[in-house]
Every structure is written in C-alpha cells, then in structure tokens.
Length: 161
Image (tube, rainbow, N blue to C red; front, top):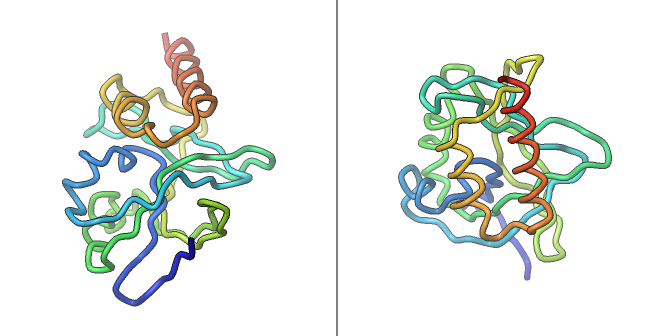
C-alpha cells in the first residue's frame, strides 16, 4: 500500500484521544483509517494538565529505543484548522509537528501535535481520558503496547496519592 499526500489530504498520526474514532469524529467528520502506525524513538507521556480533561494529557517526547503506537488517518486538509483549535494551537498548548511513522511496512510523514510547555513531572490522566485512549482508541494497537500504557498510567496515579 502506498500513502500519497496531496494538497487536499493530510496524513495525521493520533496517539491520544483522537485514536477514538467517536471522539475524533467530533472534530473531523470525514476521515479514512489507514491503520496502526508506530513512531520510533519516542515515548508517550502526560506532560500537561488540562482543566477540560481534568488531568494530564498525552504528549510524545523523544526517547531513544522507545516507540509510540497510534492510529494513522487520512483526512481532508480543510479540517487541519479544526484540529489546531481542538489541540489548542492558537493558545500555545500544542504545536503542529511532522513525524515519520511506520504503517503497513511504509514510512509515512504525518502531521501530529506535541505539547509546547511540558511539565517536569508527568501528570496522571483522569479516568475518563485514560478510558478514551485505552478502551476506545486502542483497538488497532498491540496488546503489549496497550498494557505498557495502562501500567504507566497506574504508576502515575500511585505516585500522586
């Protein structure tokens, strides 16, 4: 399978709540799921507190030897502005970044979002936000990766008690 970019379509790598098709559809009503994608040499972290989500929110941070699994979508380019608003780009919460991910044996350049001002210590996500990621969004992810994220979230919760 070959992934082609055009001026009308964008590849988008989701690693947090946007992995949930139900949650994502609220922002981007039309999309194509390309499949599970892997970002090498990064790890999933919860580096920012969100009042709206009532806890830490997902971010990707460089980490040699680690990997982040997510969902690769093909979206109409006209929805990137809506994604920017969802992710707080105008307010300086997240910024757009292009990353190279592996999907179905292909290396694909994809848009994603990273937290601009990261907290030094990670913040446990709320139960509802974690559920969106682990229960609704993880259907395409490997069991091993999902369990690793689940353990990481449990560790953050224990640390905050």
